[in-house]
Each structure stands twice: as C-alpha cells, then as structure tokens.
Image (cartoon, rainbow, N blue to C red; front, side):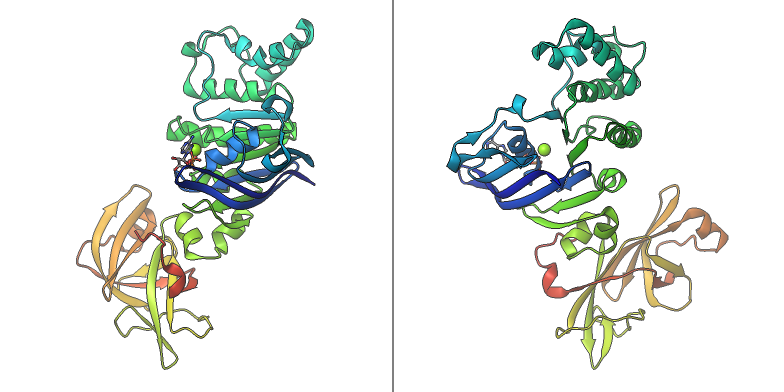
Length: 364
Ligand SMILES: Nc1ncnc2c1ncn2[C@@H]1O[C@H](COP(=O)(O)OP(=O)(O)O)[C@@H](O)[C@H]1O
Ligand SMILES: [Mg+2]
C-alpha cells in the first residue's frame, strides 16, 4: 500500500519552474531516498508533502487521503498529516533541554504529563541519549543534537518521517555512522522514511528504493540501490551515482573502435542497435591494469596516491580516463605507475549507452 502518492504535481516560482507533472509513490514501511543534485527541487517536494507549500497543480495523498489539491481546495494543515519532519535547517532549540526539545510536540498536543514523560524517556533511550536528557544543545556534539532532532520528530509516533539532508551539517565520520543509526531506527519503529539528499552513498546505504532526480526536477529512474547502480537507464543516472568515465566508441565494419584510434574495445558482449556511435561508461575501479598485458594501450598522464587506492589518469587515443587500483595490489604486482608510463587496461564492468543519450550530461 502507498503511504504517499503524488499525482501530476507541478510547482514553480515566478519565471522559475521547479517540479513539472511529477508522479511519485512511496510504499508503507519502506525507506525511500530521493537523490538529486543541489537545487533540483528536493526541498520543495518535501515542503509540499509536509504542507508548508501548496502545489500549483496536482494532488498529494497521504495514506489514501487527499491532503493537497488546489483545484479542489484541499490543504490539510501540517499537524494533521501525521508526519515527523527533520529538515537540514530545523535545528534543535538552544534554550530547551534535551527533554524539553523532545517533549515539545507532545506538549503542543496536550498529552498528559505522566504519559509525556514516559514517551519522552522512551525516545531518549531509543536514540541512545540516556543520562543526557537534562543537557542543553550547546552541551552536546553535532551527532547528539541530530539525535535529539530525530527523537523530536519520532515522539509523536508518525507513520511517515520526512528527512531532508538531516546529516549534511555533520562531519564525514559522523555522517557515515548516523546513516546506519537512522536505518536502524526505521527498522525498530517500522516507520516509513522519505529521505532526500544529494549524497549518493547515503542513498545506497539505507534505502529500499531510490529515485534519481535530474537538475530539472524530473525523475529519471526509480529502483533498488542495486538496480540504480548496476543498471542505470541512462548516462545521467550513471554519472550521478559516482565518478564516471565515458569512452566514445564507433562501429566500423562490425568492429567497435575507441575514440579516434584503431584499438578495439576489449569486451565480449557488444551492444546491438542501429547507431554506429556508442559510449561505454565505467567507474575508476572497474578496470584491470597491467604494464603490458591485454587490453587497451594507454599512457599514464597523472598518478596520485590516495591512501587505500592509487588513482591514475590514463590517456587512450586522446581520451582521458580516471582509473583506480588498490594500493596494496599495486605494490604487490609492481603496478605503482608514474606519469609517462605505458599501461594496458581491461574492464571488469561496462555500461553501454547510445552517444545520442549523452547530450546534456555533464562530463568530468
Ligand atoms: N520560496 C522560493 N522562491 C523562489 N524560488 C525558490 C523558493 N524555494 C525554492 N526555490 C528554488 O527552487 C529550486 C529548487 O530548490 P530546492 O528544492 O531547495 O532544491 P534542493 O534540491 O537543493 O533541495 C531552486 O532553484 C530554488 O532557488
Ligand atoms: Mg534542499
């Protein structure tokens, strides 16, 4: 069953369309992530669901009840939509203790004192803040403050949590840890989560399903993290989900030749179709590099040691490609290369697209 259904949603500002005829359904109980570049309309979409804004056209359902539809004068107030909301800029209140922050929604709802106390302390426990309930936010770390915000959003027992980049103000280590905590909370409480972010890793790590939105507010693909990563429907999605290399490949007399040179693409299953212009996409780690083995011949133009990996920019017939191998593998196999070294590249994964599809995709 769908907990959210957005039908034909359009929203814009004067001279500035954001969402256009958008359709999106979220199933009850799932953790759904909307991933898209900065400025594509993710926060606008969340504000529409939360009821902070009204769509120009279209209808939003929560739990099969229409909550927003301008044409039918439907606009259910936020507090009646059964939501928990954590927005990036929705900080905890500095003048209230942890307890008071978490209690706030219950106080507004006039929940009796005893029950209020019980439920707040339950949440304090669930988000791992035992013993800290009398502290003020200034006495907490960034991660602890974020837990308070989560607890405050969850204390009203919402069936749906809207999380808008809730971790973006945290440092990288904490972000990494907190995303698993959010996932754990979601499992524990059985709440549906709609999470929006521009951070691909979060999307992959915590989601049952992911939607990829482009800069124009159009959804390009919806699928499991695995499907999005392994079966991108177009170069935009592939490019968005991580560092992407694109190699031009032309078909000539049945052979697939790389760039403007005469090397054949070393790949067993070549694409079929009418076009002679293809693009093969791969990620830096989708390669086997050797000094003079089989594969495409190239020259290392730049070599960087990044800790766990060695990052080589390799030029093949005029095309520059980012490749990476594990540092310890490089040391063991005499593959610590430097600029000017010759090398060979084979692929462990390739995604084929028609060259036509690549138009408009930002190439790095
Ligand atoms: N109240 C507003 N008035 C005018 N433009 C807005 C308003 N809110 C958002 N926008 C514009 O809508 C676009 C989408 O914004 P937003 O949803 O915040 O993007 P993001 O995907 O980064 O969350 C941006 O270009 C933003 O400038
Ligand atoms: Mg935003």
